[in-house]
Length: 343
Image 1 (cartoon, rainbow, N blue to C red):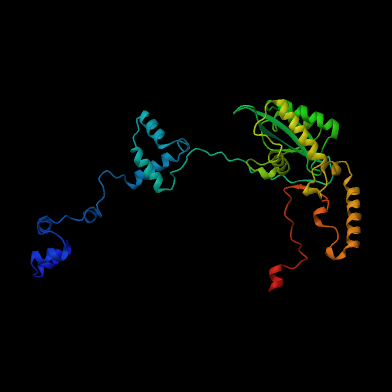
Image 2: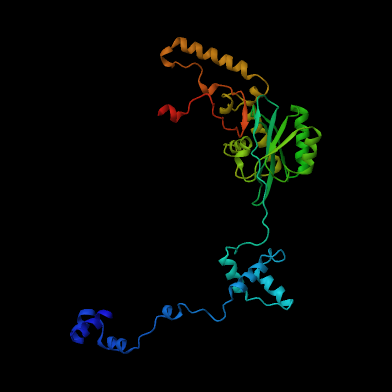
């Protein structure tokens, strides 16, 4: 439109200006006849609204909102309570505006500050020192029904010391399972679990306290704090024997019992030098390792070209400890820094 007016003012006919700009002559004529609107920004700049609070009044409102009486109240509550007392300071929107200008538009109530959860750091150097347990759901015969499998494992040997299937989850059933396990396999130093209702129940806590067993719990929503039980459940549920649903609780108990026997006495676990958990738990792994070394030495003597310089494969090494959240090794102050050596 501005180009059309410039062309006509420089002597170009309106017909030619319309051809060049594509703007109809009547449209250009109406725009030219329209009175020039004043810039609202220019008219309002420097003009203070008549209803604006003074700086002293604004500071007074802020002092009231931040006072000990109203510091945890919303502006709506402050507004209503002051009105009931015959006091009017300003509108609710003005209160919010003043708070916003002072970076105080947020939750005014005291916020819950949960204590930092300590990362559990547990180590077992022999069987019967640290037990880990958890409960997993087994799908029942119809949708929406489940059985609960209580499973406890020795983290050093990976031996399943107890596996019970129940119709529901409760601290009383967990305590009964632990009592039976401790009578057969001995009382451990530590029992580790997550923070489920059964794990943190008063019944379980009282039992462990009476036996002087240390309780350890995972941090909230940190599944890695209970790795041995989680890995065991994955082996259970991804195995070929796992059905889509269990026909009855007897079906579930029979399958868990058969899995426990297989896992303890037949399964070669990569975390314990490809030994069975039973061999490690009952102290037979050392003799088995010696026998394996003899077999490997005989094969090496017959065909040395088929073996490398290393001796026994590392996958057959039996670890000396088992950790839950092993702390990072601290740097040796006597060793030079890698970056300094490279420099």
